Length: 198
Ligand SMILES: [Ca+2]
Image (cartoon, rainbow, N blue to C red; front, side):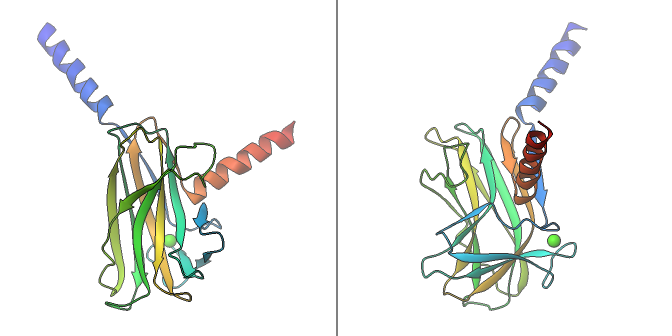
């Protein structure tokens, strides 16, 4: 009996240690990106063609000569050894040449400011085949005391280049907080509602 109890405890502990939280976003609302770099480096809009899932996608048009980063997710409350995985579908139909899209990220150790920057966290160097929709994914392991990560959709390589993004999934350890354009807007409107009520 005691053995069974110990095994149950171990199973519970294993499950608790491996618990993850997941957020998805498919650009079905009005929110586009959390922020960008450089300022005015791209135009982010909701589009209806092409679409991977639902009836809308994110359209990113490059304006700047330096690679623009559209911030599509922001994870806070991380610590060393934590793993964050993000995937999204990207659309480009120009094999081997621009426009192209990459999933990338940078550290942000300021949980109060999405524009905080604490160094590049690298990402997936693959540009995809350029044959339409293609799912791209990357996993980051937290190091050097960083506490937050901002996931970027990057647009290559010239002003005027356009790519589309849809159906994003972010997985982070239990205890972290995942902000997507949709749930951050929801949170902000909730705060506004609370303030308005007083
Ligand atoms: Ca969609």
